[in-house]
Image 1: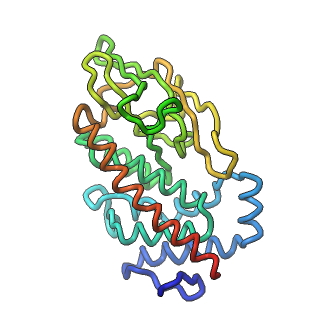
Image 2: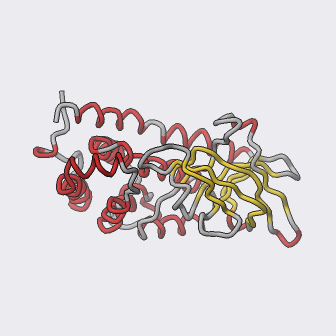
Length: 264
């Protein structure tokens, strides 16, 4: 049986940059130490230091950018992603969580025909940003048939988004929140991007008492342009399930990392 041992870690890949990212991630956590990790967990400290590290090492950018939108070793590689799932969760599920919900947020973007938004996402990954997946709602959970988030057409090609999303990781910091809703004119499903920095985006609260930020956010007449639409109709609907199929697979590898730490 293979058990992750940071002191004798054998990276599952051979590319120099990828190996470097994995080893530097181990170094970050080992240098921080168990005492600080537990203190930050108990004090619910936002993991800015980890996100700064991943930005410097281009971890998310290297592992989560498809080859067509990156360079060098950047590619979406399930094997490397699973290795990072295990490694992050080994040191703390909260660190894995911000990575995991970024994967979910990127799903509808990479599956979108909107090339400009793909390029924007690739740049934001290089800039060290995180992403979010605005699907579930407080009254309905992930029952997407009951989605109340609406997108209403306005004169001149603008739309106004109205509604709330609940239990959305990274909703406090994501400049690209892939948000699922329904058009009020045609009833079609739609995915669009929202930005936490924009007016009429309200991050209401962190709905959990933990180091992770699992947000409730509200859009009130939030303006959306045609350029910010990811997908419409069947394509938007399919993006929900394809994203969940890709993203939720990571849960198993995170669990392996957590369990393995019991032997460390």
